[in-house]
Each structure stands twice: as C-alpha cells, then as structure tokens.
Length: 114
Length: 267
Image (cartoon, rainbow over all chains, first blue to last red; front, top):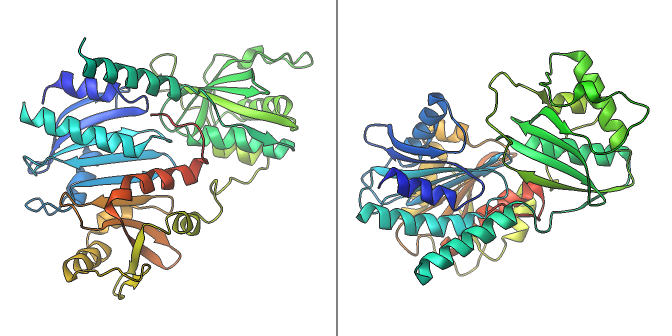
C-alpha cells in the first residue's frame, strides 16, 4: 500500500479524519493520512486498541471491528493477506458505517495485492 | 476517465454534498431551554474541529468554530442584536477559565435562541488549522451556566431502543458466566461461538475499559456465517449481543444514530 492510496481512500469520505495502517506484530503505525495533526499519543492509543481487538493475531477472528459512540466511530479491518496488518480509520459522528466498511474491504484487499 | 473512475468520483461528490447538508435535520424548539439544549448538545458532539452554522428558520444566525465538545470561537453573528455589544466576542479565542467570557457567551446564546424556533445546523470542515492553544468554552460549562441538564442521548434508553430496532437480526444475548439467551427460536450456537463470546466478556481488561456507557463494539468474523458480536454496557455490566453478520455494519450505524437522532449523514 502506498501513502497516496491511503490518502485517496480517506478523501472519499467526508467524515474520515484519519486513516492508518498498523502492524500488530510490532505495535507500530506504518503510515497515516489525516485531516488534522494528531499527537503520537493518539496514534499509540489507536495501535493499542487494534492490538487488543486483534489479540488472536494468528487466527481469522475477528476480521473487522467497529467501536462506535457519541463522539464518532473507529473502524478496524484486518488484512486477509497478512493478519498482522490492520487498517484503522477514525470517523466523525453520523458516518455511514455500512458503506465505509464495504469500501474499506475493497480498498484494503486491492491495495495489499499491489 | 474510465466508467469505474467516473462513478467513484460521482459517488465521492455525492458523499461530500450529503456531508454538507442537503437536508439537515430540523429541531422544533418551543422553549428557550429546548433551543439552547439543541445548540449546546450539537456543540458537545463536535469532538473533531468543525465549523458549525446554526440556522433559525433556515437563516444563518450563528457561525462558530467548535472542537473537543466546546465552542472555540464565534466566527460570525449574522443576526442583529441592537441592545448588546457582541463585537468584542467575535473571532477571538474563548476560554472556559474566563468567567467573563463564559457569562457573555451564555448571555448571547440566551438572546439568539429564545425558543419558538426551528433550528438546523450546517456542519463543515474547520476554516483553517486549529491553534492548539484554543481551548474554547466547554459545552458542559455553558450548560451549567445556562442551568441546563445535559441530555443523556437522543434516545432515552439506548440499549432498549437498539434491541427493539434490531429485533429481527438479534440472535442471542450473553452476559459473563451465563448461558446464552436465545432471541430467535431456530438459532443454534456452536460451542466455538459461545466460547469466543465468553472469552471476550471475561478477558482483556483494556478492551472492557475501552467500551464506555455510550459505546458499542461490533466484531465480525472474516469467515462467512459466524454471528457478529456487539459488546456494550447494560446496567448489569458488559453484555454481548449476537447478530446476523450481514446486518453488523447497519446495526453499528443504528447505534451511532441513537446518539444523534436520525438525519443528515456525513458519508
């Protein structure tokens, strides 16, 4: 995946404030694209949640996760090619999560193949 | 441009058009409390930086910069308030710690929103980069100053509302160390699924802490057929709802909507 691809994906959603690619095995953020400059602590936090959610890194469970509440939604999608890589996106309130999930799956699968 | 690229561009344009409010939700605020409550509740939901235009009967009457659940700056006040000097409040940083600012802004809001109004909002990206020293006046502080109680949510009992709306796709519910309660007569849950749910309910204190009273965590398997799981909080603790996996993301959207009411969608 290239940074341009990640930025292009994020630009398709008005409420997507951040898109990040996380490596679960090392707990590092591999790349990000965001509308606002988030501090490292926010990225670390996102990484920690991803590791908690996908603790079973060898398995297929879960494939995706959405944590949603009053302040917006965090969408996590595990790569089907490499289960240690997770796409994390931060959305504002009222995002259409069904459409986002579908688009994210298509994007993530295609970009990981390239 | 290929047909696929053209369609993708058109979809992105439509999404952006929708984001900036083709048909914003209207709030009929009969009383001053209702009008101020709607405005402040909307400010409180602006966590990421936003430019927020408040309209009364479709006419812009207040434009503000909001972020972190607070009002950072008053950008514009198109309504005339002849008996008040508001110029010194415009386009400058406001702070919760400045009692004079807080009282002046509360007083201004009281005059702009006397009730008997139809209120709607246009939400857009911030005008420019946010100054990190702009802390603004928190929505909670304005509510206290105006003697308003924060609304817990758009739906009084979110979990009950969610379960009622999702009735057709809810398969079962489980609490920690309890047998699953089946919500559809024909559902058969495998041991693998119930073990997975119990593991989620009992393990990972970090994950449990992440799910606050307002949140729901939706988990879906990459393998087709496995039920999706929604973890949320009930008055008895963490609760797992098992769902039809095909409805998982729609149910996540529904949960999100229960906070803000059904209306404008941003994507």
